[in-house]
Every structure is written in structure tokens, then in C-alpha cells.
Image (tube, rainbow, N blue to C red; front, side):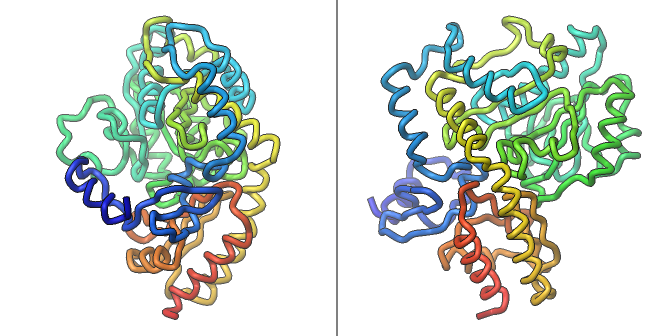
Length: 397
């Protein structure tokens, strides 16, 4: 099928939930995407922070093939060595002691919300159920997680929404203090808001929030779905500040392109999930667990966290140089490892389109922020080519 055949086939068969980019992808390799007609694009989005090792990584392909011949799925009614191996390796990246495997970021956040509420009631005997989140946040599209999300645009038409969620202004510690009460079970935050425009929480706010949660007996949940697995220059974004959250959620980059999410928690908080309290049919099946285990092994072995930090430092300098030459075009550059936001002074749709036409896949969030989430194996030469194209487009050349 050519690109037009694919587009016409979708128009007659799929729900119209996605505003697609104007290209079809037939295969991918490394940092490159290929259309059915053979056009090549540099992937600076990585499936939205998913394919951290790039596409068709040979070691992942080898694991997929070998595991498919051995065991793919039997459900969570059975013990499976692949889950144990992955759990051991994943928890080894963190201070947390227990993990629940699921299928997506929304499921991970849903699980974290359930865990926080049930732990408060069953583990501590307290009637706490409210979850506080921040404006501009994004936590998923299930009914609970879209209610938790601090963006009204994704909630339209889905009411009535679940009770027990409060959204407070971004990085306003006084507002957070005012919102906490005897019903507060947890605070759910992103260290860097991805869909919100690659917007980091100020360090002093996060430290103050952690202290406030400890003082009030409120659980701190950190959503690392986009920022985790090496994206920001450490395995977890909260490790930059030495935080010790009670619960951490992860998905996207965990299994190299296969659907997996996880909820990690402390030993104490895990008391909220006794047998029969939560579950999923597909979560952590043998195939996906084996792949995720290999993903983490490669990231640690090849120091891709450190590489992301170094590449981000280089790219920050390059982008700041463009900003200094074109201050009327770029308002701010935000770089956290290989999580990059370039905030324009104007709506960015035409800039995004021009970059796509020049062969660079990235996305636009909050109307003005060019967001880059490239594979952690992206090269300096590829990022330099993007920078030259960006400056040329902004300069009107």
C-alpha cells in the first residue's frame, strides 16, 4: 500500500480520534523513519519518548524473537521468571521496593491513584481519598487520569467526572497548602510537564512540596511516564533532586516500543495492594518483560543516561546561540537531557510544518512549543542538522 491507500483505508475504518501527521510510516531503523514511497525522516520524537534505543534495535529484535519462541503470554495467574528478572533490574534503578506491571502510562497512573486511596484506608485506617494535581499537567485519558489532568481541553464531553480530584496552580506552594486537608491522600506531579510544554517544576517548589507532604502525612506520587528511563540525564528525573517519593509511575520508554507501564512503591505503601485488590490480564507478560529487562540493561551498560545529559548540554548551547541571533522568534529554550522544549514567540504550526517538510519529525505542544524527545542514541550530527534547519526556517530562508 502507498501512503494514499493507507490514508483512505483509515478514513473508512478507524475512529477519528487522531489528528494524524501528513505521512505514513512503513518501517523504521535507528533514528530514521521511512514512508512507503521511500522518503526518509529523522525521528526527533521517538514515538513520544518511547523508542529510547531507536527503532529496530538489533538486541531488542533478538530478544523478541527468542522470547516469542519460548513464552509470550500465560496471564498473571502464573509465576514467570521474566517478570522477576525485570522487577529486580527495574527496582535496582530506584529506592523503591515493590512494582506492579501494567500496559500503559494511563494504567500506571490509575493504579497509583488506586494504591494511594486503598493504602490510606486499609493500611493506615484513614478516610483519605483526594488526589491533588497541578494545572498544565497530563496524566492520561482514562476517566480518573483525565480528571487528574490539569488541562480542561481533554475533559470536554466526558462528564460527569469522578470525584476526589483537586487541581491547584502550577508551582504555587501556598495554593497547595490551602488545598491539603484531612481528606488528602496524595499529590501527583510531573517533574517536567511534557504535554504542558516541557515545563519543569522549580527546585525550591519541589523540595518544599516534598517537605509539606511529609509533614501532612500525604503520599508523594511522581509521574515519570515521559521523564523516566534516562530521558533527562538520570534514570529518573526526581533523582536530580535526591527526592524519595512514595510512588513512581513509568511507561513510554520502558519496553522499547512495546506497551508496558509500571507502578513502583515503597514497601509500606505496597500494603495497599494485597492479593485480589488490583490486576490486569496482559500486564508484564513474558515477552514484554524480557524486552524491558534488555532495555534497562542496555541503558545502564552504555551509560545512555550520561549520554543524554552530555548531548543535552551540547544542544542547549547550540539552541541558545540560535535564540541570541533570532530573539524575535524564540522566547525560551528548555533542555533537560534529551527532553527539549523550544518556546516560540508566536504560534508554531507553520514552523513545525516547515521542519517536517525538511525531514524532521517532532511535535508542537501548547501551540507555541516545539517539543523534541529523540532516541537516546541520536547523534550530534543529526541534532546539528536539525539546528541548521530550525535556524533557516526561523530566519525565513
